Amino acid sequence: MNVLIIKTSSLGDVIHTLPALTDAAKAIPDTSFDWVVEESFQDIPLLHPNVNRIIPVSIRRWRKNLWKHKTDIKASIKDIQQESYDAVIDAQGLIKSAFFTRYAKGEKYGLSKTSCREPLAAMAYQHKIDVPKGQHAITRVRQLFAQSLDYDFSADTLSYGLRKTDFLPQESLQKPYLIFLHGTTWASKHWPNEYWKSLVSLATKAGFNVYLPWGNEQEKTRADNLADVSAKARVLPRLGIKELSAILMHASGVIGVDSGLAHLTAACGTPAVTLYGSTNAVLTGTLGENTESLQTKFDCSPCLKKECGYRQPSSVQPACYQSLPPQLVLNKLQALMK
Image (cartoon, rainbow, N blue to C red; front, side, top):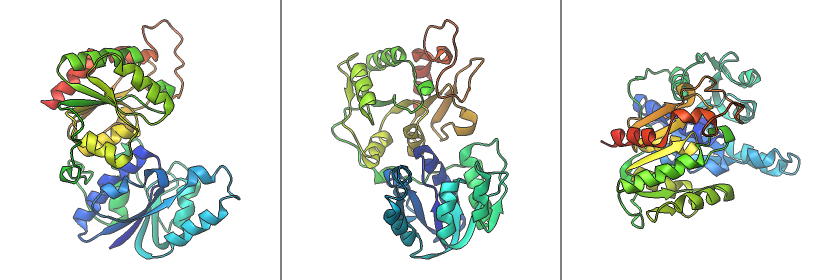
């Protein structure tokens, strides 16, 4: 069976789709997948052994000036139409993903108008699948694939399909090491810098080396600041998804805020703790055998707001993180590592 997946972004959402591929490949042997994905995330699907071809698109760049990029858009549509598929699954349920689904050749499957985030997207599908909301994003995608391709799956097992043997350890990193994923998009999701500094101190005193990745200049500045706490804390060079995946795969443990890289860590199976304040760990928390999502215990958490709106006195900002101090977080990680 040849299946086309439409799931363009974001990093975490793309990773959330991998377990559904594992389910389908197990239920229907010899299934191969092509995948339409945002160009900046195209290395993620290729981590899965059953992905055959990537069709990159550049929606984030195109939408700034659609007319200017009309030639590129037509070229991507032509790439999508190169093959006919047994099934085309829109795993995103947005108008932008439905746009590309419409042009694909094959029976089209997607969420029904009551199940997807943008109901108009459902008009692009021949087969509209009802998947109840209020479940974790990974579970919903697995249900969508199972109903689209007509197989049963067990929610008791979860595999992203990544194999540790496919990732070589980085000889330049000193073991044992921890990775601290401090970067994220929303201001409300950032764990306080003073907590990160305390965590670096606690971890290095416990015998670990600490490595700090970054993706933009603001994150680089923060990483440099945190590395000043200890000689055993170091800032990594700017890395691509493949290199970072290998580093995460062979780490002793990872602590991070809600971000795409935290979900990548879960896919790697590395012991990891992810911190949730403004976002909801029940719906989008990291899932994996060695992963624990810690939700803050605070009256207004999760608020789902990009900026913290709490205005009462608090020891840190965002205030909800008072319930997730550094020692507690490190203790949780060490328990997973055992």
